[in-house]
Amino acid sequence: MAFKPFAEWTTGSGMTWFPRNPTLQNFEFVIFGHAEGLVVSLDRSILGPLTASLITSICGTALAVVAGTLSSYAVVRFGIMSALPLQVLQLRLFPPLAVMIPVMVMWAFIGAVDTWWGLSLIYGIVTLPFAFWLMKTFFDEVPVEIEDAARVSGCSYWRVFYRITLPIVKPGLATCALFVFILNWSDYLLALLLTQKNWITLPIYMSTLTSPMGGQMYGMKAALGMIAAIPPVIFGLLIQKHLVRGLTFGALKQ
Image (cartoon, rainbow, N blue to C red; front, side):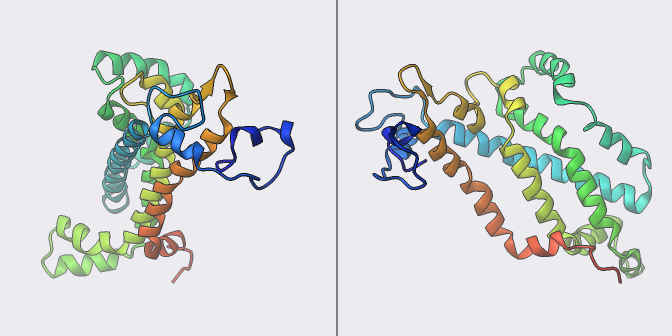
């Protein structure tokens, strides 16, 4: 669909799996906001929403992974706030729509609506339970005897965590980061309710690709979908060597 011209978008000209006249017109349209041969144009190109999605997804992922890693390690190793796992899990028991109205009021009160940090903050909060529980399962598999031996050698608790434990769970950390990033990257509801104009993300931008003359711009949406798939794929390739290890971490008992 992304490579099909306008005439081949619908079944009127006969549905085909592959474009009969392949074109890059759809990519040109979403990148520059207009394309040669098309009478419609866009007020904004993909660059602004792409930048907004990257910044908010990366910041939200960093916030969730850092907070989830530290809190899960504290629970697993020191038993601090043993009820915290269930309390964190409760954050995901409510339907998002049930809590979004109070969130919208609070975000408006602190001036976080339609800002990169406001969207990043809510992304970090919403995906924190996933990061917490994922990292908790990885820390559960690390033998405590390894840390005890390091502390006997004179290492502090922070040095043991930073130099001993964290490198062991690095594959799990990479897997957790990728999982949380994909959740933030594909979010639609939170961005729809907490952004207005300045920080429109890719899913919101895709919903605006309609035309009074042509209706749904299926070709442009397909092109946008292909572009939107690139960052998660690149992220996955960068951490590929850790990914398989992270997905199987703890699968075999010693």
